[in-house]
Image (cartoon, rainbow, N blue to C red; front, side, top):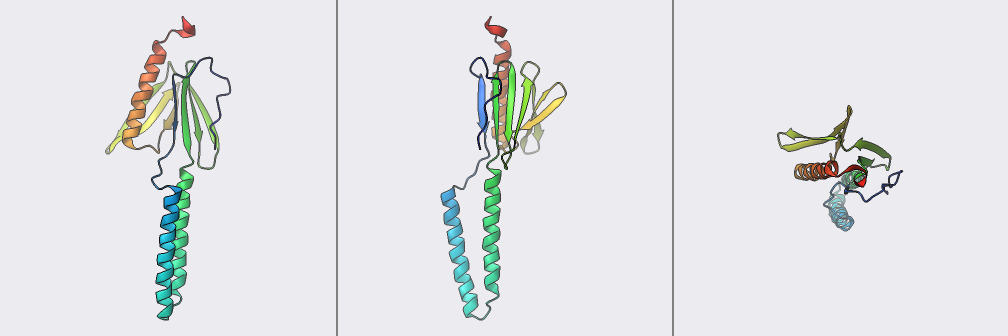
Length: 169
């Protein structure tokens, strides 16, 4: 998965450029270790039941391993999603890649862009970009503190971009 560059190349360096990715706490090595431990545990448990004459239980141990494997793989699939925010030349461009690799691109004029951090009972909720009747929720996979930090950083970058003279003068 790659995040493609903007189609029209910005004339200057972006004043804000960040790639957001969901956090995955279990590394691929950790996944292999967990699955190995579960497989050995299930094999030993199945062997005990087989020796006791309850051989059909072995199938349930196999189903358990398959379901745990499937759940972890689905979680890693969600981890392939990403969002890139790039503020350059008076435009905030958002590239969004979903877990299947499909890419969407959204562009907002920075001067008219409004950032709203909705409050939730557990802290900051959705982070919404709004301009000219269009709304886009970003960073939905981020933790509430990360979303609040992103809102502060993006707001500061927008204020700085709005204060900069247009056309370099």
